[in-house]
Image (cartoon, rainbow, N blue to C red):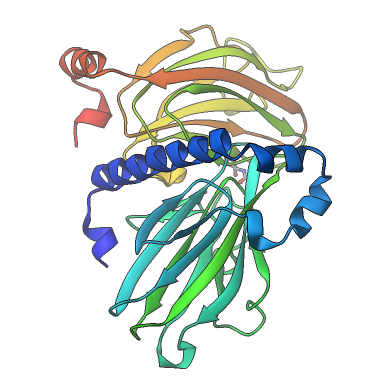
Length: 323
Ligand SMILES: *[C@@H]1O[C@H](CO)[C@@H](O)[C@H](O)[C@H]1NC(C)=O
């Protein structure tokens, strides 16, 4: 697959470039389409869903694409397009639905459009299979399987994607992307290289990851972790037996189960809470026993090239530069 031959870093740069362009687009719309905003502000969100396609943002979809705004996206194959992918992204507290509107492809001839609940990059998945509530096969929904047509497919987190293959020139499809509030976000990929976030795990036996696909300086400003009252503070090294704990992970892929641990934070943590991590992907992960409500707040910003250079020179053991 052509997409997969690129290195992870090249892919990310391409995607981030698309994302910044698209964010520019959405700002442009917001600034110029005042009547739309005014209209939306007096309508309930239910009514808003009913508004005819008239006011919807539209553009063509490319064979390799990144979509960060709601709207209708149309793909038309001018030549056979055998390995295409579109990455969808929303804010951390949102999830995404994709609706197939008008699809003219040859399913029996090998064409397909498959939605994936998450992102796949270079064979790695986010969220990792361990952290996703659904078994892997249920995360793929193929339009060509009966039942998927005319149905909207919902993601479990703020990222989703479609893969598609179209043989016949002139074949096409349109899809509508919408964002919805996710009251209990668990796994998240940050849209931006800087921001702040509070991760809360509400007494669920489930691990949650916040992934920042940039080298960043990260500041853990606050955490409140459920722990066993009889946890012996000094005798046990590490956090595994303390109750809930936070892991900082780093590496170059998007599968959190393949990243390397940078540090663990638990109730006995006294180390630095400010760190510069020169990895392509930095992840804050809450390991939750399900017995407590735990919370961690952090902020992050992109490392500049000088900071990256300093990490490279001073920290020969930094695994993010060893491969
Ligand atoms: C959460 O992560 C820990 C440590 O990686 C693991 O031992 C545990 O099985 C995970 N829990 C769930 C529900 O996946």
